[in-house]
Image (cartoon, rainbow, N blue to C red):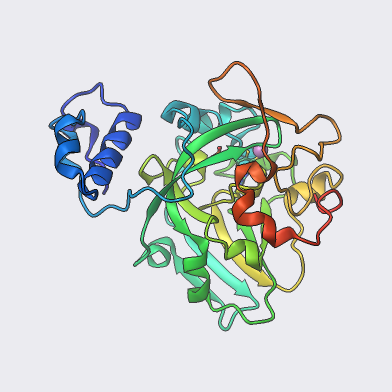
Length: 315
Ligand SMILES: Nc1nc2c(c(=O)[nH]1)N[C@H]1C(S)=C(S)[C@@H](COP(=O)(O)O)O[C@H]1N2
Ligand SMILES: [Mo]
């Protein structure tokens, strides 16, 4: 367990944001040559000094330098239609949802189809924390510290065949526990997919949580996809199935509204949604809108994957 129980924490006023920031500062400073001088000036409480060590909270070159959204923004303003379609629904309606037991089925073009208990799937995986911007197709954005690991580190273990060109993901189908699935808003289960090079890209994460630890359910625990240069809907939550295929998967949103939601869904201020502009966005917690960046600001890392592709047609 990465965090101690709330009752173990010295001050009840310590927020998840502060804990996270303290751990991060602690690890950054401890690993830097300036450790001694920094440590003296850092606002380390007695508490923060007891953070578990050896946790991968090192900064990544991909980290956004922008201010992170609060734990409350990140965990109470969500899209997860399996738990309702209002932003506040997922946190309220997933309270009784225990994501255990949880298995992930791996099939399609693989050497050997397999079923993994989530603990087996995650055994030996090195968790990282990456601060990524995320941009929803609806026009809002957040900066979120994800806790997870690059999908590229898992794929080789699943042994896809050379003929696999895409990877498809599916969410749990369980209308008894996911009340939103009793209504046909989408064709359940929620389905998404990536081209193999996108799946193998270093930026693509499988996240198990936010703010330095696993959970919560409304953010997709125990396993969800994070693809920061694409619109948020590509980041499928509650994954129970991974299929390798030679055909472009049809995602739930493509199926329900193909002229609005394409397979690529790369953030692109020049390609509008049929009903609204994608040129700017509202960062949660800010008043003024800001301009949306091509590939959500990750162009230097990902644009090369789409050279030769007409981004207006392949939206
Ligand atoms: N299974 C599932 N995954 C999903 C969704 C959903 O409704 N069901 N919503 C998507 C959308 S539209 C967005 S913007 C992100 C939101 O992720 P967050 O709530 O962790 O910020 O999750 C995506 N993943
Ligand atoms: Mo979204």
